[in-house]
Amino acid sequence: MSGPLRLWSHRWPRALADMLLPCSCALCGDTAPAVVCTPCRQRYAGAGGPRCPSCANPLGAREPAGQRCAGCLADPPAFDATVAAADYAAPLDTLVLRLKFGAQLPLAPWFAKQLHDAVLADPGRPLPELLCPVPLGPRRLAERGFNQALEIARPLAASLGLPLAPRLLVRSVDTRAQSGVAPRERADNIRGAFALAGAAPEQLDGRHVGVVDDVMTSGHTLNEVAATLKRAGAARVSNLVFARTPPH
Image (cartoon, rainbow, N blue to C red; front, side):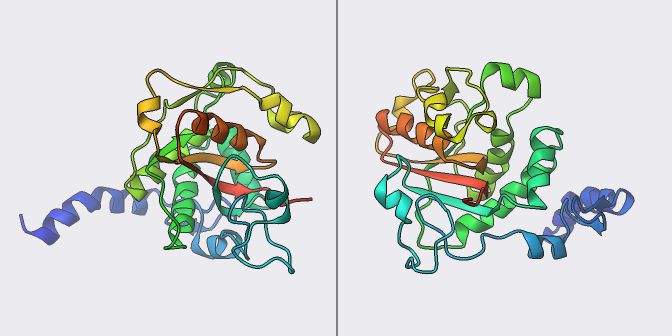
């Protein structure tokens, strides 16, 4: 079979499915080839203006592009960099909730695609050597039935050509959800919550780890993950998050 025919033989089942079962945009409801149509993606997705390279918060008008924000300069986090594909704001915030609490798993590959594009938007940014999702605790994983961070990390790792270490970390303490904790208590709530699983240290010595999550809000969870990885020997930790909650 020739090259073009072989390629078509792999693609025709998907093309037929798209024709018979068209997808509707999760935001506007129009027919679309993906879970979010191109006009909605162009209107709502994207990282926006300059961000702090460390925590991905938007930089103020007086802060030079590429420089860490005042918060990260005053209190440097354990992680080294953060890439965010979008702001956690309407209407994209509803998609995050539909994935996390509505089990709408087809949204996860779309989140991964936006994050893939954000990672590669800066060719000077060093790529991680492996990806690791933020783990859920046993109780919350049993309630939900899946880990949304892992559902995003799988297609992201495949598209970037990076190994995925889904069991690198475990949540050794089943903490309260950070969303239900007062901001001033979040660092204490998550402290000591993560640990390495099994013989994981060999995977980490001197390596650059990318930590994948759906949303970054205060950053305390990701900071605790980064501190855990660095104590185990990681040289650099970058957060790869679909959405970043803007500061209030």
